[in-house]
Length: 281
Image (cartoon, rainbow, N blue to C red; front, side, top):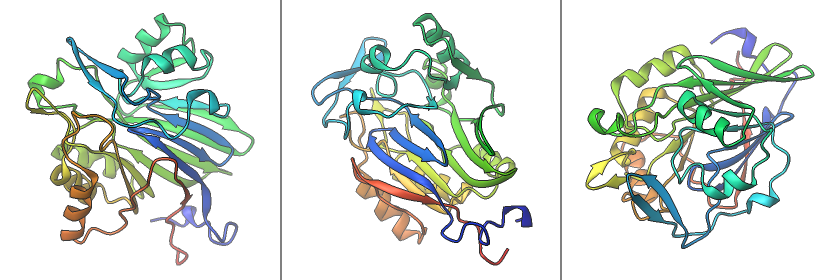
């Protein structure tokens, strides 16, 4: 760690914003002066999310808030274009001018739908927004949505590193896994982006036709051990029947391995996001 990350003198509380869990992989982030939404899924209970190839899954629970109750957004971070991450309500109701930071595949489709500010990122590249002395940066990192042969048939997926900088210094780093399985090469994320303060970990052990497409409790714990975030928020657990592994299993597995910092968050709950920077720096 470097002295450039020492915020304790100027920011004693080290609070940088908040996280509101809407449901599934949808989270409303307030980071400094920026407001960011992840993977907008606002289908109501009983409505179907379409997953391609004629497959769908019926939502089991309502989102915590409605799409029309969202505040003005500075960006949407979209891991991939599946119906449980960007649904028909989002397609109809989101502001067409809001930047959507996503894969190149999704950006092309979104552009055809009229989202003129959709930004498709190549792996390891970034998008930035600036406001005064603050910078919001979203960087695309790898993900693999299922075994190799199945992954090639699904929409490309990305994980994201979301950084908040203030006065030229990083004050917060968030890792959003996206819908991925744990693979050894994901360890490069921690090498390129050390000091991850928090992670939104997409779990659920999603299975379609018997094939595992998102991390179960064992893979989720493996990834957390590999990446080493200070705080872990398990999401994408139980909104759809295709999600076969409950959050409880992940909590039990991380407890068994004595992995610290796991923080369950309920739908509609807002938690404070803080920098994990040591006061000793």
